[in-house]
Image (tube, rainbow, N blue to C red):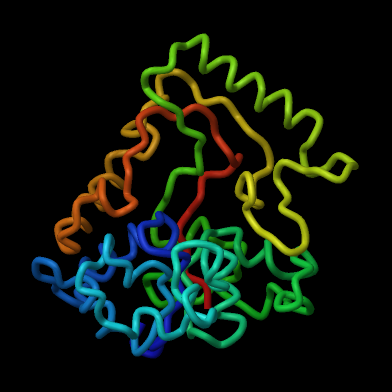
Length: 275
């Protein structure tokens, strides 16, 4: 990590590129945070970063250090916003940050490189990008092909899920599922037509669902709660991170889902570093 002085992240509070990452830095003793110092510690670890939302007052009341946003692309009000106003927001945005030399390393999902290279992304910035121009940087300092993510990743993050109120009855949940399932039978990405549920088109990204989604899958009743879905390990990492940010998670965009209704992607998302 010592040679990776600039970093690209999908955004503050996200599982892919934030929730697990500071815990890794703490475990590997790259810094030893004290109460409320996590943002300062990361600002000292990297000379500049793009972590969209990292200077928002509800996430980082102190609004420092400013180098957490210096690598972001958008100018004006949209710079470093935790939404698509920032060009480098999200997993594809973090990879774009790497591609356009905004950073030396990007913390993204395991499929991000494949989704944005070898002709899979028609955006101007992604054209002519080859997957073999990038590699995974493992925790043991090995560098591997981007398809070897099973043996080279930072940790596992549960796949995206649709959530609904815990007050919904099982019949109401079934209705929601049936509508979504019916929709994907007619508007999935591999069916001809002007509208696709899992494709935002040329100029946009993740408008309805994550563009990386393949199909919706119903979660078994025994896992339809956020604790079982996210897992004890991930929840412990999130809680540990809150200790060092000193921000109430319910006021900082880290809302705990009350009920998981259906699965967005087939594969479990693994948090990876790509270089």
